[in-house]
Image (tube, helix red, strand yellow):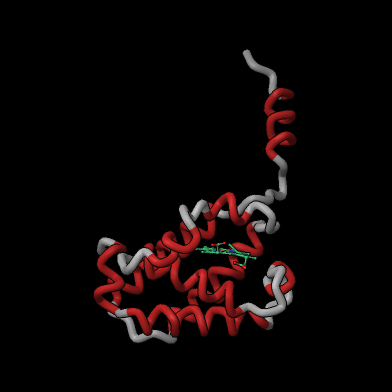
Amino acid sequence: MRDPRTVFAEIGEAAFYQLTTAFYEGVATDPILRPMYPDDNLEPARLRLTLFLIQFFGGPTTYSDERGHPRLRMRHLPFAIDRAARDIWVSHMSAALEGLALAPDVREVMSRYFEDAATFLINRFDTPPTAIIARLEEIPRG
Ligand code: HEM
């Protein structure tokens, strides 16, 4: 698969702004995602995501120059991201990606990254880890 760090040079800065604009248009009217954003104005969040993605996909490191290490899992812990929220996030991002004219290998590496990153950020589970451990302890071992 294509190296994600080659994407910025391939598609350019404007494509990232276009992507996050379309993505946040979806978030703005989403009944599950919109209430999770603490700020009335989504524009600063959109800018942070844009700069992060530009950096991740091999562009300038303005995101970390301004915000430090991304630590995305930690920064998302205050937001209850369960499987459903993850899937909705990914569906808005996939729709936004559809709006860009991308070469298939670029589209593939970007989609794959969004799916994996969003899965990694799930921090609320239907079955809490403690319940799983309790259940395992009930299983007789021979
Ligand atoms: C899975 C569902 C997700 C939800 C519900 C979610 C929600 C949020 C919320 C509520 C914020 C705070 C808004 C703000 O910055 O003011 C945020 C910040 C952020 N999110 Fe997500 N997010 C999700 C997935 C992702 C993914 C997959 C990425 C990266 C590919 C990402 C990247 C970011 C970044 C870069 C920030 C700003 C971090 C900072 O510098 O403070 N998020 N997200």
